[in-house]
Length: 170
Image (cartoon, rainbow, N blue to C red; front, top):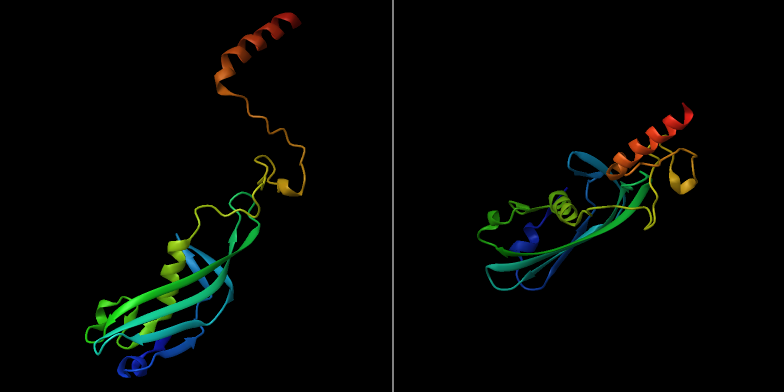
């Protein structure tokens, strides 16, 4: 989605305000597409600082559905994007989010969201995850699988114990 800023950049004096709804259906991070479930219109304000200088202030808010890192249940994560860009009206190509007099809204939003992307997403603080044996979501209850993993540092003791049990049986 592109927002036309021609009028805003050519008009000096009072601030120009505009809004638009981005075309984004999702955000792709590390090759995985995550759907956007809620989005507010992007708001833009152009404030002329001087004859050749302007400030472009852009704000947006959206919600992305991301799976929990432990149990894979969907989590609605809210993001807000806020960017202030100083513009030299004579050299608009210095701004990566402008193409001629068009604001590249989708690119600006995508970059802002990627920079805010969380390292870990949990459905709740005490998420128990999935059973490593059967794959059941442990937040819904126990599955009955034996998930005991022996401590490898105790392997020598286990061998002695197993030999002791074996000699008792014989």
